[in-house]
Every structure is written in C-alpha cells, then in structure tokens.
Amino acid sequence: IDKYPIWILGLGITGSVRGINLEDFRPDLIVIDDVINEENSATDDQRNKIEDLILGALQNSLAPATESPDAKMVMLQTPLDKEDASCKALDDVEWKSMVFGCWTAETANLPLNQQVSCWEARWPTETLRAMKEAAIHRNKLSLWLREKECVLISPETSAFKEAWLQYYEVAPEQHLMNIVIVVDPVPPPTDIQIKKGLRGKDYEAFSVVGKYKGKFFLLEYSLNRGHEPDWTIMEFFRLCTKWRPRCVVVETVAYQKTLSWLLKKAMQHQRRYFVIKEYTDKRSKYDRIVDGLSGPTSNEVFFVKTEHTEFVSQFRTYPSVSHDDLIEATAIAVAELTGANYDAGDEAWEDIMADEEDIPPLVYAGGAP
Image (cartoon, rainbow, N blue to C red):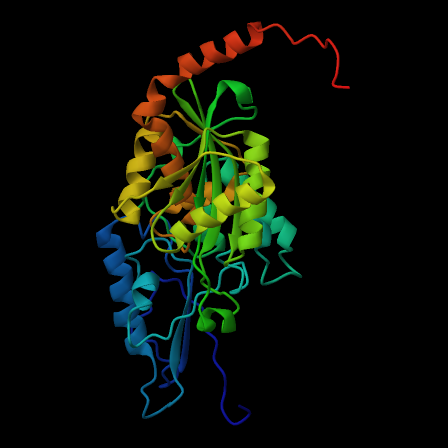
C-alpha cells in the first residue's frame, strides 16, 4: 500500500462514470452503494437503464485482471424490485451474492417472538420486534420486510391483499359463536433433521376460528416446531377446554391419521371427550389455502388481532413463505365453518342458547344417604 498512491473518488450514478481513469490507472475497487431507488426502479425501462449502466460503463471501468488480479466491483443494495439489478445479481454467475437481514440466520424463519437481532448492539431484538408489530398494525408489513429483512413481496405475486384483513379487539361472546379447532401436525423428524437442529422443519399448528353472523374470527393459535406428541395432546385439551369447539378437525393422511388415533386414546384415558372430525382433501396445499381464505377475506368478513403476527405475516406473503402450517390450518377451519352444516347454523345456534337460558335451575331436594 505504501508503494502506490490510493485514490478515492466519489460519483453519483448519473455522473461521469464511463471510462474512469486516474492518471492512467483504472480503479481496482468499485463500490456501488444504494444506486437503485424508488424512482429509477419504478418501470422496466428505468430498471434496464440502471442495470446497463452498472454492467456497461461501471464494470468496464474496472481494472482488468491482467493488471489487478484482485480487482472487484461490490454492490451494496436494498432490493426494491424483483427485476432490479440487485435481484438479478442473485442468479448471475459473475456475482457472488449474500443477503443480510435484520434477524440471525437461525431465527429468520421463526415466529416473531423467537426472532433474534443479528446486530444486538445497534438494533436490540425487542426494538425490532416492536417495529415489526407496528408495521403489521399500519398495514405496512411488505415495506418492513423489504427494508429490514431484504424480502420482497409484491401484490402481483401474493395470493392475498393486505387490505383484506380486518382487525378486532373483543370477539363476540363465546357461547354465540360456532367454533372449530384444526390441528395441522408434522411427522416425526428424520435423523438428518435432528442433526440440523430441526432447521427448516415444519411447525405443528393449532388454529381456533369462530363464526358469528357471517363473520369469521381467528381466536387463538399455537405453534410448535417438530414432533412432540405430549405437547400436542396437552394443547389439544387446553384449547378444547377453553373454547368448547363444535369439532376438532384432523387430516387423515399419513401421520395425521395416527394423530387422530392418539387423540382418541388420550380422551379415553382422561375420560374427557370432544368431537374429532377426520378430514381428507386431495387438493394441493395451495388450493386448500386460497380456496379457504379468499372468499371471507376478500369480502372483509375475516377478523384477526394485531398480536396475531405470525398469521398476518404468512397471509400477506403467501405463497412466498418458509412455513405455511398456520395459514393452512386456519384455511381449513374457515372452510369447515363455511360448509353447509354451519351456514344456516348461526341463528339456530343463538335460538338454542336462548332456550337454554330459559330453563329454570334445578332445585336441590336432598342427597344420597
């Protein structure tokens, strides 16, 4: 370094960047820092111009390998469009691309309450979690994902629209709702998955959905990574005792059929019984999710709470999600409540409950000797 002078030159992307030459020397390092913005990435023509400028004028200003074997061009960029130069570089063999989001690699795909900041000193975990919750509340999750997690979600590729989700603070009285619980289990992990610490393993999901006067309410959900039958049975009884559902829906495909048997045996053992409805659907997962949720959400009759961050995130980004267990379980629950057995049942159920309230209480007249 001491033998050669070091030149540092700063230029705007629209400046004179073609043929950079300082005293007959070509630069051996070009750093392109956030040259793509909301304006020059808005249209195909603008994106192509910036890409051509980077791969044309800038790249050809770099010193050749014969003069500087270590010469390189570095692009530091927050992706703004799936067709901009930074996103195209991900699949370009001449670029070595790395993506750095705000969460650690181990927790990036976990539920929000388990995600951990990768830069705790500057962006504490609790601060990032609060910011993401606020973004969800103001319907700006896609903006947050882009700026903080380097994840692009566009309306054109998403199955659902952000504006479709409605929010509630207090649900209707429990005894007035038709309530369904859906269990989306996962099979036991393989040896390879165990060695990897269950990274990439799906979640076991419980989704509790209620219906009242044509409106659907996501009441509660539970998620657990991996295969833990004891947790499943414990959560099954907890949710059933709390919500008193009309039925619990369990798929009867492969391992799911075994789970249905386990739950029935557990009910016999504890002598606490709930209706289990075995469910079989040979359609693709995508079709089940879209068909189950599109109608109620697009008609603005599906309600969630702001703290339902995992569901809201999956809803707004689907199908570009790492895990879809929760949204699938919820879609099955909504489809079950939309079925013929429940469509005409809301008012009838209210009448039944009203009749129940008219029954006089039993009068204690004595006990057994």
